[in-house]
Length: 110
Length: 113
Image 1 (cartoon, one colour):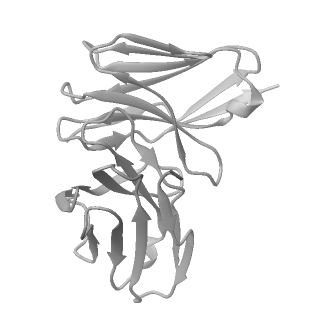
Image 2 (tube, rainbow over the protein chains, first blue to last red):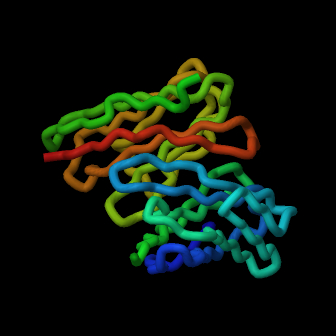
């Protein structure tokens, strides 16, 4: 079945850029998503990219997609303490199911 | 439109009891998804609907779990004879068919004691 993998932890200094990486297995994915989850809160859709695009920028967020390598990344510029959260990569598969990775916990160092 | 709504937000139940959760999707969203999330894990797919039709149920899901979406609007998820391992956050999401965005509710946190 489909699988989405991402590293579990990332520590970044405040003001630096954060880059969270993700790999997926389904070459027929239609959309790829980044969700943010703060402690005790629900899933917030941060950004998404259609599978025929290779980049999308939205203010401090940049999504890069390498479809050949099935690699997705999320770059957060000028990381702030409010960016501290768990970030989930997800793919929308050929059957329209949304499959999630285990999440990357982003820790901001002062 | 107030987004995806789930009820209740919290549920504590004794082992062996049945529980039912409700999800109200964003109006006109014909896809509805159910997920389960345990501590430190990503959301795990349970089942999904297009309108009132249940399209797929996870092979990992016990027969104690059943979901319905009788009129293609709200959905219910029932767990029969709850076990401690069922303790988790149950999340609902909705989207348009092959729509770009899928939106999640705040979830129902189930604790089985």
